[in-house]
Image (cartoon, rainbow, N blue to C red; front, side):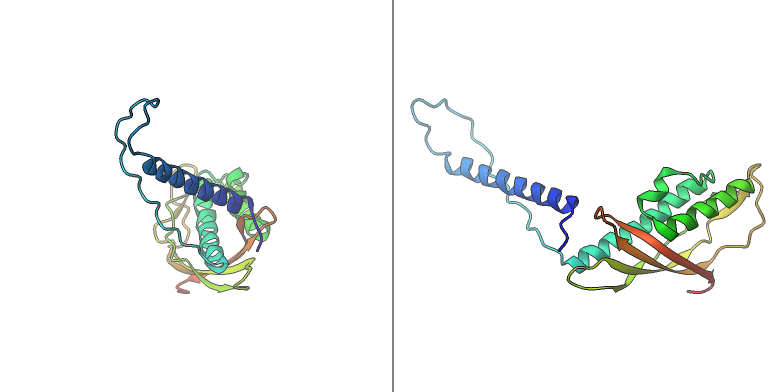
Length: 195
């Protein structure tokens, strides 16, 4: 299993929470009659028990991280498309490689042609496959995205005359990067009505 900084941080918080619960329990155990040299204290509320933590499998964690990266990529793209900002630094948060290049090129074409996008597609993303269960590094996300509520406009606010939106099948490859983050590395958008 690859231990990432986020795993270490989660483990540190988990350990800190366990220590805090243990300290509260110790304080409750010592709440008897104070010794003559100890100052009297006001009664304390009983300690609250920690919520049970469930450990997800590496496969479940990879699936969740992949879908989050996929949806994050589209949120970043929609924000950049509102101004056709093909150089937006946020595009690289959830996308890399061919996926990042595809997003940037599309936004550059819009910028060059004086077009911006309004609205946001909806997504119905789910994992269709994982490369391994024990130590996954590649996940395929399948989405039926609806672009009905999106439109391209000219810089003067007039519709660009592009075709109406609809349901598009999208398959995306999401991979764990050397820094431990999951990013979309490639995707393909099919024609309207493909899902």
